[in-house]
Image 1: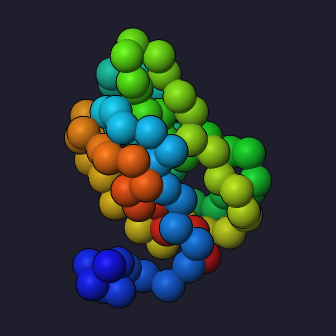
Image 2 (image 1 turned 180 degrees about the horizontal axis):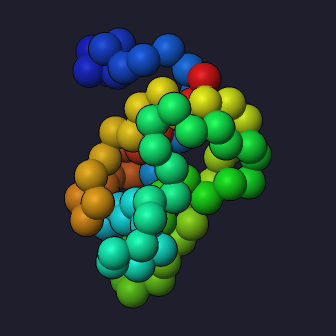
Amino acid sequence: VAAEAALPAGTLVRSPIVGTAYLAAEPGAAPFIRVGATVKPGDTLVIVEAMKVMNAISATTGGTVKAVLVDNGQPVEYDQPLVVIE
């Protein structure tokens, strides 16, 4: 939890599953979000692939993306913070 104290203030969007994070719909495509982008509830932020199933992780709140905490293709754990929205 000490590491989370260093995160920017805002709403943390966490991974609901263990898998691999992808920041775009396919290789070479534009990322879903960038720092500074405005998002609204329901917007896709990241995809987490688990067992060959692509799971879209959506914004639960609107606001501005303050941080993207994962890299494309990075393995993620259950409940790991992915994005900060303020």
